[in-house]
Amino acid sequence: MKENSKALLYTAIAVASWSTVASAFKIGLRHYGSFELILVSAATAMLVFAGVITFQKKWPLLRRLTLREAGSYAFTGLLNPALYYLILFRSYDLLPAQVAQPINYFWPILLALLLAVIEKTPIAPFKFVGMMLSFGGVALISLGTEGLAGVELSKPGILLAFFSAFLWASFWIVNRRNRKVDGIVGLFLSFLSGSVYLSLAALVVPVYLSSLPGLLSAVYVGLFEMAVPFIFFGLALQKTANPALTNQLCYLSPFASLFLIHAVLGETIYFTTYGGLLLIVSGILLNEYLGKRRMRI
Image (cartoon, rainbow, N blue to C red; front, side):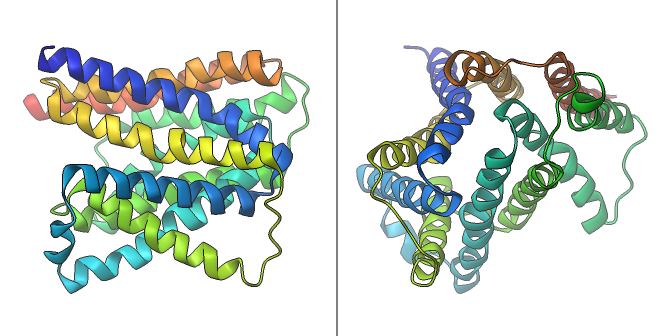
């Protein structure tokens, strides 16, 4: 199989995995609380990453980490998986999946804004076009769903969905300092430290893991939200001759996810969700396209 064909296959696996997880979150939350769901799913992902490191014989790479690099994962693990998924799962608990998911997809715009503030660099005027489109999409979903579709939404749930996007963007900013660390090793260390935090919290937080459907859902989330898609997306980027296309194909997953949310969860998809998600993704892609085009001029 040619390298580009492998890249497309790996990308398809990642997109298919991410497309299912919004439904899996809601199913898991019927049987587990947010804390139980993240506790099991984070441990599952950590074990998967450990298995990949063993298979690829990368354990010696851990000995090459500097003290600063190793210490930074104590913080990244707090951001992701611990805080990020606790907040994200709670937002899914309070909102329809079709609303929580697109708001969370707003994170690339927040990432661009945070980088501009941290690095004290002005945002190029042409990028505001994409940002305004995405902002409009979020407004259509979070405000228009009540005003136009007549569906009452949880205000705390909307705020938590926004906060989860902020945490995800923050995680990627912090993690940029570890660019020299192997990707799988970095994910393992983040999930290892995150699992340690969650296990310590479990000593004081009541935990009920007796539900078999909850356990299976949590394992599924750990596999197909936190581990498998990131592994295959990383492989796709290594094999592809067109990284931009690989990145853009990932934005098919929220649209495929809406179909599953309707088919599996039985949610009636509001027209504001379709319109808002289209605006959010169009704004992100336009931002990337204009940015790359501007750099070539």
